Length: 206
Image 1 (tube, helix red, strand yellow):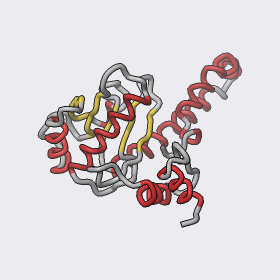
Image 2 (image 1 turned 90 degrees about the vertical axis):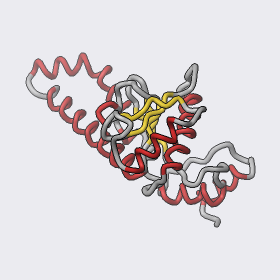
Image 3 (image 1 turned 180 degrees about the vertical axis):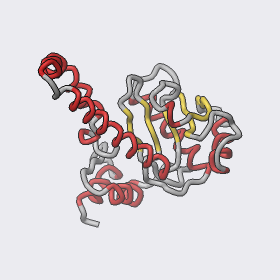
Image 4 (image 1 turned 30 degrees about the horizontal axis):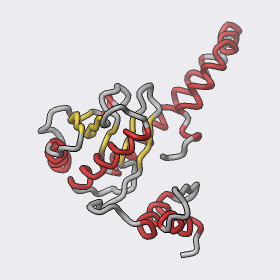
């Protein structure tokens, strides 16, 4: 009960702090938030949200807090993500919410995805754009992408791995012959900005 993350969460609950940040264990942070701050009414499970720094940034949740979800959980994540994205991205209207799935058609995917699609489509306060496939993450089709924590964590870790690999490929291409090194000197300031925006080490998991 006296661990720093637990104390920090309690300070938020009691109104003595506005937010809690932890550089420590994600599971402990989620547990502290659940036990000390509690949940919004109607929210059964927590979600971890992470922002992908595309030209049109997109919020992904859940990125690993709730591995086994019910359809209602995904609807809750959609509502929470929609409110967060609208404020965080300073959108003029309601955030566009998409459901991660293996196809765009409403009848595609697992029973969880099909029922979650039905619930989101019927939710009047949600700007639901339908199913979104993994290849469309950075295409600007949605501001919020919703999935279960297992799938979301795989997407997050895959994106981190791809980002590292692309950075390594660019680095290799610019450290070859003299002409490549000359080009690297000219491009370095611009490339440093790109590197900083996609390097997961600058952000952590979420």
